[in-house]
Image (cartoon, rainbow, N blue to C red):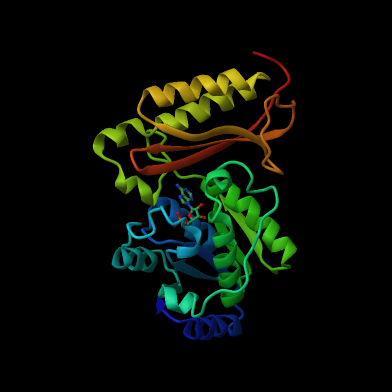
Length: 287
Ligand code: AMP
């Protein structure tokens, strides 16, 4: 595995792989790799001949009060994990390499970041667009793999790919969970044992709402409010718990049969923010 810390070196090594006729798969991450990330790497491997993993905690997608400084960093663990997975290039640039000068160009997102995480994290998705756009230009991959875990990110990146005409196929990887349902996340490391034992309640709430939608329930407002109340009573601070349509990510209170919906939530347990979602198809009868 080649370890690259500069854009020039990255480009050189990617070019050499392309010259050998290899199809390049890109897996962007912020490091602190867990089984969820590894599942993305394995999926990239299936769809390409050489995998490039990037580990970069991107400062521009964190708000001023957020956890950029204390975000978990574990470079030697990450390198070892990628090596074991047979990754060809591991790119871990310092911040100055990704942002050598003050940026004069910003990104705005219309409607897709109005709800869910975008509503309370206005800096987040413009920062994601900025860094993924750079990574796409640096690597020019044939395919790039992102997780359903960050479903709003995935939807926005699909739009970015189309609107900026990036010639890359995006692949969406399913969410990897612990045995009790909690979605794996680098931020789970922040949880105290007591918070960790409560954390699966987020997935349980989403699962319950999703199950009602699948059974044809069209009155989601009270259903969702009840779940929020239960979470709050158990020490969660709920940022949002919402059902949105799969295309435009707009809130829906009366799902239509045959349509797909995303039931998504973000909560705080202490200072730790957890997100999760499920995608369900609404049915036409109440069972
Ligand atoms: P992050 O390092 O948190 O920015 O995540 C990097 C990529 O891994 C993103 O595309 C995430 O959606 C994906 N990811 C994070 N957690 C999981 C998980 N539990 N299962 C599958 N993919 C995940």
